[in-house]
Amino acid sequence: MTQNATVTRILPDGMAEVVVARTTACGGSCGSCEACVFQPELKAIARNRIQAKPGQRVVISSRNSKVFAAAFLVYIVPLLFFIAGYVAASLLGASEGVSILLSFVCLCISSFLLVRSQKKTSADRQIQFEIIS
Image 1 (tube, rainbow, N blue to C red):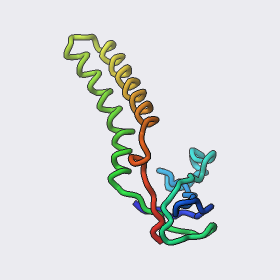
Image 2 (cartoon, helix red, strand yellow; image 1 turned 120 degrees about the horizontal axis):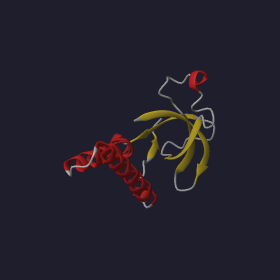
Image 3 (cartoon, rainbow, N blue to C red; image 1 turned 90 degrees about the vertical axis):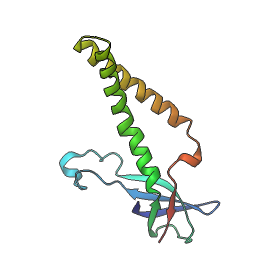
Image 4 (spheres, rainbow, N blue to C red; image 1 turned 180 degrees about the horizontal axis):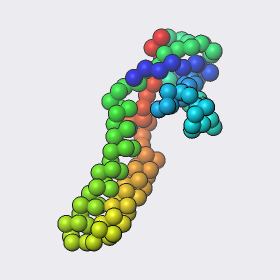
């Protein structure tokens, strides 16, 4: 996955801080929803193999597999817990109200586990960026 960015400062060990303009699902027209008005740019650390200087516009790249894995964890795993909670309660003969309640409990549990595991994530599992041009 590639994105356009601007180098803001040079860091030690061949790294650089870059600023990436946040893209939105609405196509970048923040006037219509104002969802990203508070943080229109994101900062990231990227490997600076091309020796880019502060102020330069660059293209950064990340491995697609890590991006997809992160999206899977954030979007799919909680949904699976939600469905599993409902199905488990239904199979145990619970009423529909109890099944719905248990599905939300499972959703909350999955969210808690996800947040807790991400706090313990080591640097090698984080999404790594590299300036490619």
